[in-house]
Image (tube, rainbow over all chains, first blue to last red; front, side, top):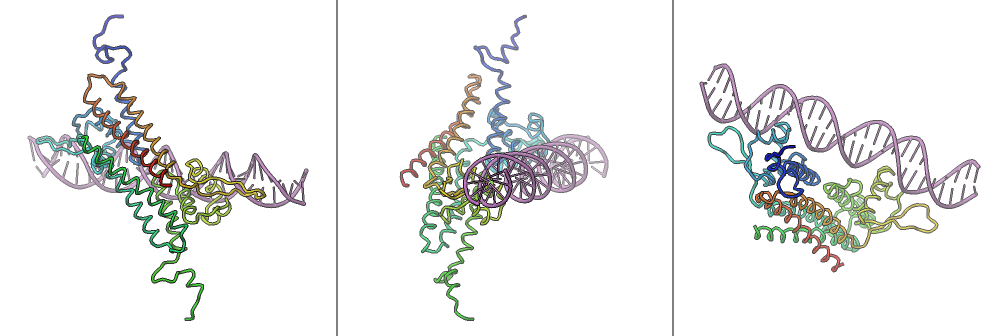
Length: 168
Length: 168
DNA sequence: TTGTTTGTTCAGTCCATGCTAAACAAACAA
DNA sequence: TTGTTTGTTTAGCATGGACTGAACAAACAA
């Protein structure tokens, strides 16, 4: 077996470092699963994972080729990620293709979106609470506790958003 | 049109108070939707909503009759809610049916469960991070930010859990 | 034992949704 | 104009999961 410098480059020099292409692939799949459990299509999660790992600007066609999925899927995935403010579409003069890149520090916005959803839920509980017969103190108390539960989460997420916005 | 005291009882005396049966039904449906968007079957959410509004202990058969769903659905719904520590099954000597009731102040546990899931996600990101080529500083930085995002949420949820546990 | 009540499990149906291929639209080149 | 490239939209397929009815199991009564 002869020495092969390319292998060293690909696999890394130090003891036991894994193939970076594998690590990258695994990470992209992981993020796909994370976002899937969040109600986001798996492919959108993989796109986000790809941008997280690579960092670079990518064209629409790149995404189709790299993730081996249809143009339609990339179209919806990029739209979802744009709506969620995780990536942005950037124009390039003289280029026909669309290009995308990560939004810098998208996390505060993510928390704000999450908090807004919970706040809406809390408002609906309050709406029910306001229509409860005041004599029904038991139900009123339980619904108030339930609403407070959402209220605490909203407050915490807002605080976390500010925290992450400050840290950059 | 004659005066009907039963109508007054059902609909309430004061100006414009709505039929409490309607309010209750609406609330139960709302909670069904809330929990559905959280990945829990809708029927399980309705069961939880019923317990929140009524407060009282209910038998398995009551739930089947009140929510007009199959025994199978109530069986799975109650199991899910038990697993999530939202209701508990209580035995009643001399009674063949199973009885259920709300767990008092389940919210700290709910937050802990949520935090545990996010912590697991964070750990997986860290696992990927630890396998990244140290020379790839860009990816390392982005993954570290991503992990921190989950870390902040976990910390906030833990704090919120303690908050709600103290308040009762 | 046999019969009755009650909850769980299983097979099957239905519905929502993610994905693809193909048609379409838009922008540009020649 | 016609042809080419690129992204979106639409129709259809396939997968997954919630729900139901029916069979089953367990506990109890007589």
